[in-house]
Length: 342
Length: 129
Image 1: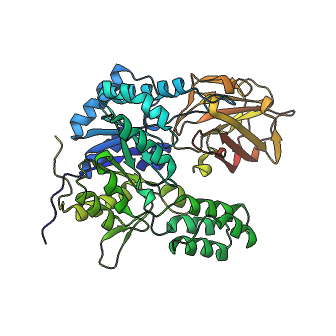
Image 2: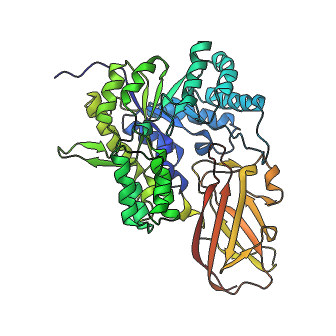
Image 3: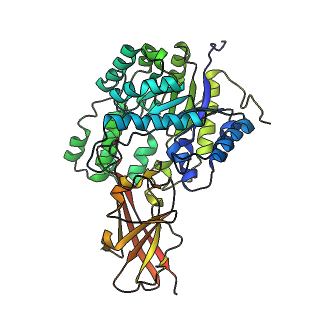
């Protein structure tokens, strides 16, 4: 069987290495080097995580950054903006100030050569519309993330789509987070709850309800009826936050989808010996992206560290390496690294 | 998400100014840095006794703030993974040896309807002077 042709590119969000960067065992340069070594040449960052003194960028740092891109053969793909609407205690940020905040994020992205800025899902349709002209002027894409518990038919996302279709702004679009396709409850999350002392019967009930794609809306109440407390409520809350949507829903919006946050929790080995994600069926998602003609980056977002750090050593680099082994298999790209850095 | 890393094991010490009390280094349990106005509280409990916020100060990269000032600080940040110094005053000098230190961090994260943050407890050893 010949592999379908595609133009999907591989990358990594440095969010994936948050454990090691937090503990100062990996530097930002190390993160860039790892991306290159994995043949995942697209680098995504959260500026407020990766860059000290945000939003001040020295000329020296900017030169260093572009030096790394050249040295490691990597390309800046996307930054993640955060709209701190509650920056001031008790005072909701005005629409003008929210738009100004996004403009600042666009400026940072432009300075470091990033063509895409992710707007965190709390960014309102009015702010997206207000910031679009500046994004157009700067040649940057401003993409709203489609992040659980939202999905492609949720009113919040429909309002965003309305703005995109009405304004026809070339700068606006979508950035799907693959956590909207959590088919099976992440094992690392329920096992952590058990280690923290959650009632195993209630944990089983929550996981089974999720895995059966049952009604998770009442889980908090049911957990209460079953005698649960704060640990069980937290698990129930998380189960109501993750969602499973048919990945084919993305096909209705492909022209607007320009970057993918490839969230994952745990790489495991299946019965054939292949690397797969425990919860998210990438073997069914990636063919849909190919079918839809997606030509942006699949950008890794490892998020398992926080669920295992109490009991196991965290090795985010190995988890990302295994996710990319899976991507190479599913994309028909057999080569670990296609470009040898100088 | 980084609760177990909030209280740093290293550098638990007496105050630099000679007054009774101590200094504990703390990290923010969150995956990005924040402007200080969004740090709602860094509450310290020492050997089971809460220390009032007005008896503590907060220092990031050499800049020291009292907690009544923090809500107004939008031009300085607690960086991702940065060790801040939480200095506190007590009535009596702290005896050398082990102390149980609990720190609860409360953050105002705009995309969440409930407070962010977390809580960590460690037994730290104060060296004899």
